[in-house]
Image (cartoon, rainbow, N blue to C red; front, side):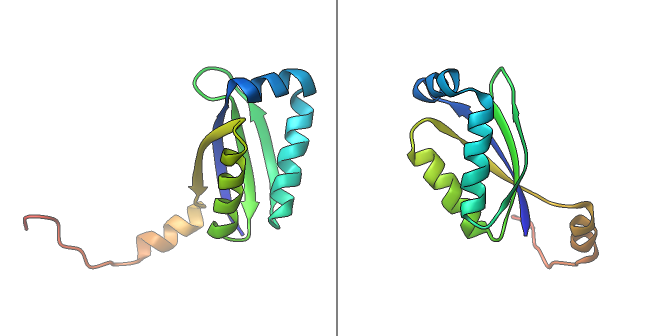
Length: 106
C-alpha cells in the first residue's frame, strides 16, 4: 500500500458541520471513507491557519486514493490536495537508478 497526506480546508458548509458534529465525528467519517477504499487511516489532525486538516492514510493504489479525493471534493464541504508520501527506502531505490535525460537546450 502507498501512503498519502491529504491537506485540506473546510468550506463554510463544512466548518458548520464540524461545529455541529465535533472533530471526533469528522475523524470517524474520514476513517470510514478511507476504509471504504480498502485503506487505513494513520492519523487525523486539525490545524488552523491556511489549512484546516492533515490526514495521513494508506490506500491500495493511486486510483483508490484519487477516487477518495474526488468523492470528498465533490461533497462540497472539504477540499484540498493529496501528497504521495515516499519512504526513505524508496528514495534509496530512486537514487540508485540512472535515468537517461537531456536538459532543454543541451
